[in-house]
Image (cartoon, rainbow, N blue to C red; front, top):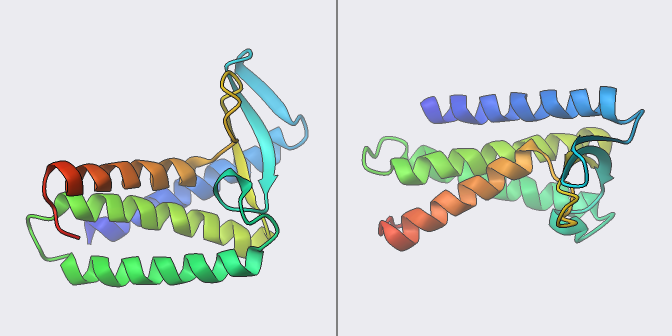
Length: 150
């Protein structure tokens, strides 16, 4: 059940960082860690990645809940397979990140974002997004280069 512990840790870490962002960044909007390169910037995202589907919270909540449920069922199905660690870890990352953002959508009607790479004008993101992307990269690596079957 280590994978469900990973999911829980990601959700707690994500929600704690968003709480801190709401508490400390919201009043000041942005805090430059490296001027004109990387800032902590408080943003409310009412869309998905890159703010697509902006203000479609009900759709995003339903879609995310379905995807999380399917991924959890799949993780439970493969949990006892010893040779699928490269599948179970990224699934745990993706599930944890998705749940973190889902909590925001349900509780706040938006997602709190705060990592801001101002150097490249990249969309502001959060800890949950990091784990979703990292999980997706590891999953793609496992499937493409290691021949892991999904």
